[in-house]
Image (cartoon, rainbow, N blue to C red; front, side, top):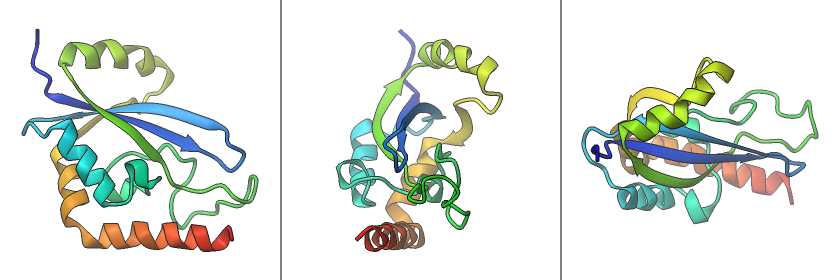
Length: 146
């Protein structure tokens, strides 16, 4: 069995009409960060059970149709740029190859990213600006929906 030195991030985007888009992303894990460490860091920035986050502030690719600062009111008027990280999984290279191959033809950008999970983890732990921006956007969205 090969070493599980990749992390799969399971992501969900739910638009204002409750249409859902799921996508898995794969990041190298050269330093051996555990799923438990990632889950704890995610909760610390308000994600996981705490709700959706602006994932691009933490170095993750977003599956939202637009990003912060872009016009989000062309569709239903309530769409947003938050994504839910629904899970982390440690996987081996064989799994990455097997799961990414079908996506390669459909999505040239692909679900495989040339960034180590440590970059994302450290940003969740140590980047107060990303945390504050994420919190501000969440509070603003909550305020706008009241």
